[in-house]
Amino acid sequence: MPSEPVMSDETILKVRNLSVDFPIQKSVVHAVKQVSFDLKRGETLCVVGESGSGKSVTARAILQLVAKPGAITGGQILLNTGSGEVDIVKLGSRGLAIREVRGRRIAMIFQEPMTSLSPVHTIGHQIVETILLHEKISKEEARKRAAALLGRVRIPEPEKALDRYSFEFSGGMRQRAMIAMALSCNPEILIADEPTTALDVTTQAEILSLIRELQRDRGMAVLFITHDMGVVAQIADRVMVMFRGEKVEEAGVFDLFERPQQAYTRALLGSVLKLETPAPRPPRPAAEKPIAKIENLELHFPLNAGFMGRPTNYLKAIDGVSLTINQGETVGVVGESGSGKTTLGRTLLRVYDPTGGQVMYWPSNGEPVDIATLNKAGMKSLYGEVRMVFQDPHSSLNPRMTIYQTISEPLRTNTDMTERQMMDRVSELLARVGLPPDIGDRYPHAFSGGQRQRISIARAVAVRPRLIIADEPTSALDVSLRHQVLDLMRDLQNEYGLSYLFISHDISVIRYFCDRVAVMKNGKIVEVGDVVQICENPQHAYTQNLIGAVPRPDPRLRADAPQ
Image 1 (cartoon, rainbow, N blue to C red):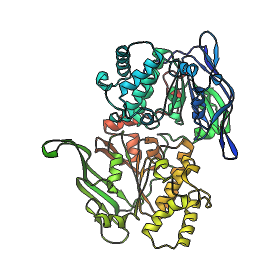
Image 2 (image 1 turned 135 degrees about the vertical axis):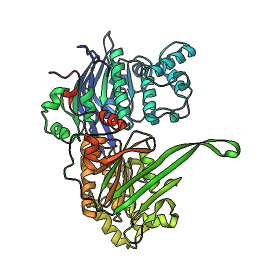
Image 3 (image 1 turned 45 degrees about the horizontal axis):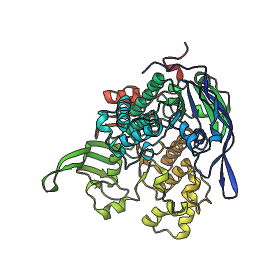
Image 4 (image 1 turned 30 degrees about the horizontal axis):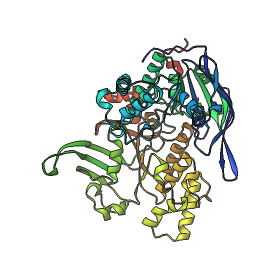
């Protein structure tokens, strides 16, 4: 870990009484209300809060990037240029003046670089264009600088990387490329909006270390937006807590964690899942009879085609995996991006046809069947018993279907219910997942991320399945919503006798929710066992590295913590 950045007493940015509104039909949403704060040169200010608290809107307002029809309706954003202060609010969202601020003085990196980087231009082209927009240098010189930047953010073979496209990079490498682009014009302030949320723990640790190192070398101020209190504890100098568009508390990181003043801050800290936190109940006594047994499962994807189009090389996405899931048990699967954990879950549902091995499943009626060899008719008969909950409720819910249509779809496909019975069942399910039963005629866009995930869970349990494959079901949610969704899933497990295969890159969530855990690397399971044993006494070096990379929500563990 690099040494700590040196913070100056000089204030580089002053935000005063900032307000941002979004008009909707005959009403107005006050997304940011009279927010004020300062940012010092070399400082890291973390902004935390739940989804919808206004933290990302505040960050985007600083660069005049508020999405239409939203608009800054009041306040000042004063940037210290060295020769005086410039009010960014008065610059407007277009023109040369705001362009001089964006990139040159203040740069921004986003949560998902895949949507921020152009898929039709090479990484090098995009960085070079950014440099040429602000610097009067030749294209050759800009390309040399771009290669140096990629090398600085530790992308291998930077010269070759310049000519690659964003889809050729992993998530961590895309984020490194995004950081290189943001730093191409030596900004004085870096705004990072949830830059590590979509990354696994080891990649997250690398990106956080990289940002800290670059901050130290360049003397940048960093405004870091996150809902991960472990990250806050690790990198923040000061913390600002937001709730429903307002600033509720601001303090130094050590004071905030040890002596939070506001009830909301205390609740936010109290909802954080810690790696050391045991499950709120003892592990369920799993039935001896398994519900699913995976034996030597393999899935190979062809990489290169040779003579007559025959593959000459294969990617072993799943490589000899064996795992048992017992009735009423929750088995976690954890690993880095690309480890094969999501592919494993999808192969169990035959999204992919396995190359080899068995997936024996014990249905409620009848003899065990091998999912790996079932035909379409056989799989259709199992879809009522084996369901899936996805990571992103935004994309897994059809935007053109009402909530009633979404939840009733599996009922319509797998049962003989009448329309009246389905309406009653949907109302019952909505109430069961903590949502008003009268929202059936609304569409997904009307709901928050947490509400959408509850709708996804209601759809998954509609036909009373026996096994649910949950693929990162809480990774898109903030800390308090994560707690609520996990508790809901456990309540439904107790009520319906569900078994879960729970896929996650968040080991703290695995510790809180699972009975056993399998650790995957490069398509193989390298370690499997009781969740407490794996988290407290991991045997495999890879597992030890994974657990060691988890950011602990305790700033006292930092090297610069006061003694």
